Amino acid sequence: MKKKLLCILLSTAMMFTAVDSLALAAERPTEPQTAVEETQGETDADTKLQAEYHSIDAIREFLNQEKAGKTNAVTYAEQPNLTAPYHAGALSDSTLESAAAMIRQIRFIAGLSYEMYLHDEYNQFSQAAALLSYVNHGLNPEHF
Image 1 (cartoon, one colour):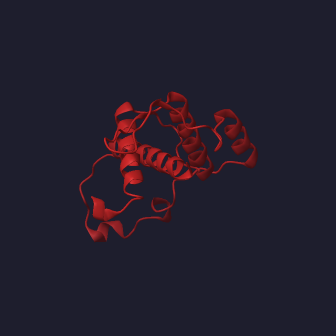
Image 2: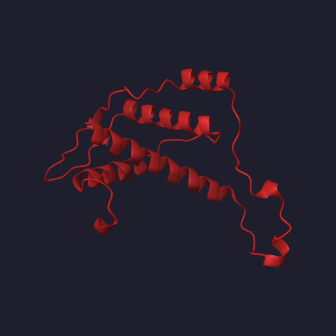
């Protein structure tokens, strides 16, 4: 059961990271590449982490607001089949929302943007990836 939960959480985290990366890439203006001589005068501000500091009280308030716990049950809207013929299944809305809340908590504590949304298509991809990971006993580049 721990293995299943770990696969689900990792897949969900990968899904949200990919969605967040796509959103950041869409917001970033495209600029032509400049010569090395022009970029040597960059300030330290250009290379600092874009993290926001939160006080302990702000973190506690956010954690109480999000209400995600590692003891939340993993439930399915559609049961997966972990043996042949394989079927990825689908997580329930409450499980997806709980996982999203936990990711938001982690991102808030780290000082990163925590605004994110669930996408059905990415959820299906993540569920299929979790099934493949389970069947192959983990992530292994030789299986791809």
